[in-house]
Image (cartoon, rainbow, N blue to C red):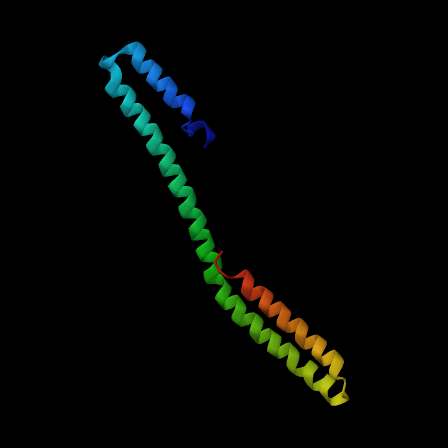
Amino acid sequence: MEGDEVERADVEALLETRRELGPALERELVDGFAERIERVVEQRVAAETERRRSADRSVAAAGPRQLALGIVSLVAFIPLGITLGVTGNLGPLLVVLAAIVAINVAHALQGRRP
């Protein structure tokens, strides 16, 4: 894409060429330069569109993954909660619960739009 970038030096070269060739070829010079600018704009728009589509796909896919993670978290916590709750060990129970909550929150934040 760098080969198609329009820089100040390009504009200066176009103006210098126009001065040298005169108004006879002015239309062709301007049309060629305009086409080059249009190509650069189209490439940038296409790149930005693809970036946004990719971000949208990522966000859309996060919903089902988040639901699956929530279900797995509950399924994992229920037997652990029962086991640790029956034994009266509240400390390990809270640690396991905090870890599951932290994992779910981290995943939910990751799936948000930037």
